[in-house]
Each structure stands twice: as structure tokens, then as C-alpha cells.
Image 1 (cartoon, rainbow, N blue to C red):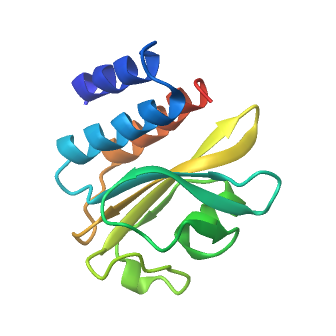
Image 2 (tube, rainbow, N blue to C red; image 1 turned 180 degrees about the vertical axis):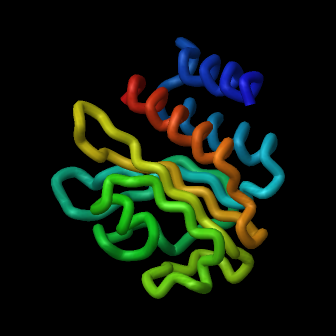
Length: 149
């Protein structure tokens, strides 16, 4: 994981790319390096509305470009301000299905100046794939991402 953190840091610190490009590269790297990450993307607060707007991502196209706060796993994290690991999405009442193949999801909030401004959302085609190490990596990543926003 420390090697992956170094590579993620070098993307975020790169003076050659704008924020959007950096986030896209982060999604690509995570998608390539962690086999059970099958959809990796960012959502951000949509202006002053209580909704999330899809940002850079890697994976199948999604209909969920706007997610109201409270709806689905992403919408719940926008309200709870806490990482949400869902080992089996079919056990969640408030799950927004993006793909029939999705079996598990992890969503980690991004804070800037104490405000929840967005999140990273990762879907997996495996049941219960996410480890404590994945959670720690993604929470670290969200802290690093907040520094470039």
C-alpha cells in the first residue's frame, strides 16, 4: 500500500495537470491496481444544493449523475459525514443500483475546512471485498485530495 500511496501522491502533486485530470488519474490508478475495484469515482456537492454531482470516474457509465442527499449510499454519506462500507448492497434498503454486477460498495467523505464537500465512491463485483487497509487508504486519499480542492 505504501507504494500505491506514493504513486497517488505524485499524481496529486503533479504541476502538469489540473484538478479534474488529477482526479481522473487517481481513479484510473485505483482501478488498475486493485482488482476488485470495478467502478471508482468522485461525487461533489453541487453548489449550494443538497445534492451530489458526479465528477471524474472510471467504470461503466451511470445514470446517477445527480444524487440527492440521503438517497443511496452516497447520499447517506453526504448526511452522516462518515465512511460507509457495504459488504453486500442487496442487504441495503436505501441502495441506488448503478449496475446489476455491483455487489459491494465503499464511500468515503472528503472534508475541506470542516465541510463535507464530496466523496470517493467505489463499487465491487465481489461480495465483501473491502479490507481495513482499503478503508485506511481511501480515508488517507480523501484527506490528500482535499488539499488540492
